[in-house]
Image: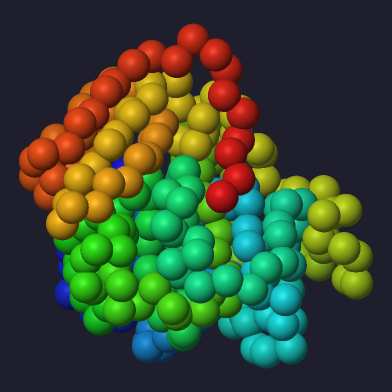
Length: 266
């Protein structure tokens, strides 16, 4: 579930961190400055965003990357990027925001598209206000703001999950400009490297929550079916309450899923 973006910083990177972690944007920007020894934050790379989210208890567990990502500059620190995403499964696909978000993928995502970051979680999107709004709103193609950006091409989309309680881990990003310890194996395939982070149990990941919200939304004469999962009934009820404000004529059903759901790909 996304948070309303708050804080003094207005750039898209800190805004995405604020939406996912629920911290003010100026606190997110201060964390990036500290970790990467930066004087200001006017643009953010995915390694910086992931390192800052790790400070607030979020860790990556899956990624989608454009096939030509390696042909462009993609990280503030390539070594930090390799360490943060070591062992993280990923797919290489060329797609647009509409292709990715229309099927309503489960989980919490930070998406880099057209040099802009947008946060997404279980049917809702938020950003700095440049494309949609700082307040989370449903992704729906009948919405002109969503349809306007649906053809933006995704460079990288990373799904984040909350780290399990007590699983504190050292951040793989450099601290105040210090050199990394070089434990990453240079030149090795990311999928073959051992992850430096403890992997949370699948039952604790938002994408595999046992409370299922089955939605049937209607707006402008168009219907859209969507399933979302949450760890607790309180989160599920909060999601339904927000969704009903946007789609009062829609139907929602909350139920506890007895099966143990596995991770779902978009």
